[in-house]
Image (cartoon, rainbow, N blue to C red):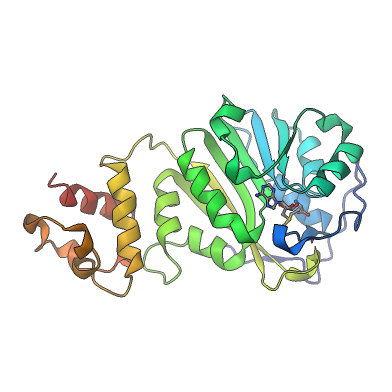
Length: 281
Ligand SMILES: C[S@@+](CC[C@H](N)C(=O)[O-])C[C@H]1O[C@@H](n2cnc3c(N)ncnc32)[C@H](O)[C@@H]1O
């Protein structure tokens, strides 16, 4: 896990910009998780994490705000088309005025309420400096659309970012780590200091990248898999023998050594094995 920190005392200078993003024109609204990124070198670096070879030609940015990241997506050499979705009408007005080249590709509304497969018929990548209050919900939605979402590059609260990228055996490892790691290869990219936002959030931020792996479907009942993972972590201090009791495991599996472990010690393959055992398979 890379722990390089960007922002604090950063000596990097911003590259020349095609589109000038004027700060402080959109009033930051706390309830929308608005913390606007001021450091252009970080915005450029985040946009640069999108890869060119993951089978998508459409990129959806969630929460573009005043377009600090959007400008680098629009200037990218990669062969993709940028769409944005923003809930804040003031930001929408700003984007419409300052990014005429985005015309017809600015979606208005709540990302969590949109049906991704209706909006886009093709594979997509998602990028964004996510509103921290809904970042887990965004990632659960990505999971629901895992056959469509080929890549995610996002900035989140550092603790959440670390948890998602964390390997088994780590105290940070949790439900979202297992579920996302089942379908995505995840890397923690870098840490971003709170001082580079306006207004600054109370916590540090972390940037992660998720790339779809080759798993089309897990070799077990996938709904049951989610149930087993959630139940296991809801009682993470207990052994799985005790934690999974509410799911009525069959008698035949009760002596299995996997049940002597705790949820945080198991990787995706072992959760698959547990799910098969739960179903007497
Ligand atoms: C942390 S700010 C990032 C803004 C900008 N990308 C930047 O880096 O400066 C999060 C953005 O997400 C938007 N947002 C919040 N909730 C949203 C939702 N449910 N759907 C779409 N956008 C949302 C906010 O209005 C805000 O512009």
